[in-house]
Image (cartoon, rainbow, N blue to C red):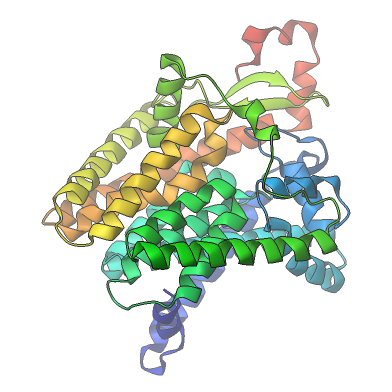
Length: 425
């Protein structure tokens, strides 16, 4: 992955590509900076669970204060603080501004996410044009636009899944040593424990069982040692084995739950639906949700975008089923998608919160169509979908930013606006 990017950036015979890459990165920085600034500054202090159950306040504190109580969530994200606090700390010292330091690190992670998605698409065999189109399609999705520009754990978590899945594709080009497998597995555990499913699957599908078990052992040792370092630096960090708190987020399987997760997983991840407000937090800020929003509920553009996306995704499903090569990669993608869906069928109050974890898998699945005779159709549909998607998703994003603000909160203070029916924007 990195070799291709190094060649793209530094090959003197292709200086125009390096220039184009630089312009693209600067443009992306500007876009994500603009999106970051859409939020009211009070969201950091008062926005606990406001942004679709996101822990923006806790993550911000973890990135800026090593004694923050919020580091206890290392029981789910074992080394997140260890990776994000140091660069934020350095920028704080240079810039003397906590907020700008967090913003800079957040945007850097967003850029790395997009580069990782492009690299994954190239490794799986997509042409440069095709990889660019589908990477930008991923960046235009509601999951990317709503989550990459806010301080949260799921951008790095998503990257860890991409590295794990990419491992199963890269082994067709070159055999890799155990330490790389162990590092990728440790990275997937370290970002979110349940993401290890991607590392486990990519390892089991490409290595003999005995060697795979050895890799898993190395990965656990690495993550335990790193967690120990984190515990020393961040005293409130909790160990990631024996955690019982997550049981409170388990939901009993039901038909209603199945439908809402299905819609969020395959549709809302790409196309932002109508926003809802179910309640307010302890500070009186409205809690955004799309858990019970209907498919295409944002309007005509939402329906058109959803229709186009489902056609592209169907082509990808057909391609994954019919392509005879890349067996390990196919199994890893399919079973990781199944694992993520099964997990979120029973776990999580707001499925939209976790969409960055399965967005790359959906994009990879859709992009598989470019490896078949339907390549041109998939590219044409994606190019048609992208502007529609951007208009729909940015409109909904701006609306969400307006709701999560003091102006909207003041409207809710009126008694007649506090009834449950009035909480829908």
